[in-house]
Length: 515
Image: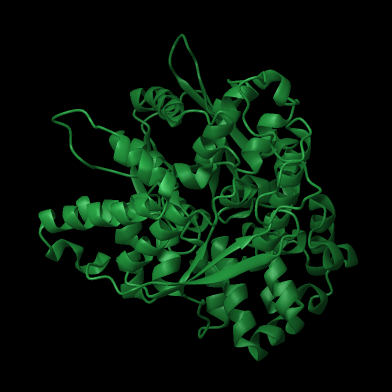
């Protein structure tokens, strides 16, 4: 995520763009939760071999790693505030970027399936090409080390495709949030992007700097940014060292006014520009370099030269008659450009020239307040927001890869969850691992007599009874599971049922009823 090549460009000029802090203490840092979780999973994966990852790892190992990472910071009185992105449906401007990322993940998944396992030809799961190698079925006579074709990038592929359940970032969000809560850290969901909210926190002096791994921060107005990998603890003195990048220093070293960093980002191309390029042909209308128009991105150094040549080091692009007229003639384009400028902390530049400018918003203020409660206080997974407000649900690739998409018990569990969320029709969709095509189906659900919004109006005994009834219904839909449960004798003096969880599908339903 971020701007291609920017991290390397700034690293080569680190002396002019950053300050080395030898003893970081008594400060509040804002942490990009998604960046941190990705960084933590990778650091943890590097300390284990690929066999351990293939077995699914252990979420408790992540908990221990996070605790050990935080303890030295707490000793130096460094406070942490975590900010996370809103659910996908609340950010429509990245639809083109998300499509490209889905295609990239599909390619990596195919490479993983072809190269990680010994060659076999079993029947393919639904949505998987018959010509692609898939894991061989377990065998008591097969040595696992013979079955798995371990390669140097096996762990990387597993991480990038989120093929390991315990290390899949989406599956880990809820336990990870609980881990942070136990440590006393603040967690909030941003209304637009975590990056933008964290930038505002730095400019308002609510935090000293942002800790993340995202090059977008390097082009934000008045920003201090610390890469996760630059935080180092001295084992003898227990002092915390960090490299703090300052965007004012980057602007000065590049010969630009700080307000023009956002223009540099637009010329380079970022996660937002593919949308305005596709729907409004902005790159062509602004006569950006031909390579930028065709590929969607442009070399950092070349973009700087182009910007200085065409606009100068301080002239504001919004004052260019052609760009100004484009925005004046199309309020929809203006809304998207205003969003891009606001993301980089430069929204006031647009607002001062177009007082009527406003950003697109999916939810009203009252709806967003309710969503924040569901995500930040009740810790519901993000797909519940898609179901509540868009009546749609994305099924992850792991379900298709493992052939679980059509599992009767899980299908019944998903339908039960939709009922608890007050929905009667929900569109489920998943992306084919091979072709990238979207497969959709509509799930019809009978109205539920107990829904999320009025859950607390029912006595706890009724909620527990409802939870048990729902779980039994799901189990009955799978004869094999039903037979196994019928033959199982639980220990005496143990609760009959407290929690049933699988990939945030069943867990949500039981959470709402019992908690």
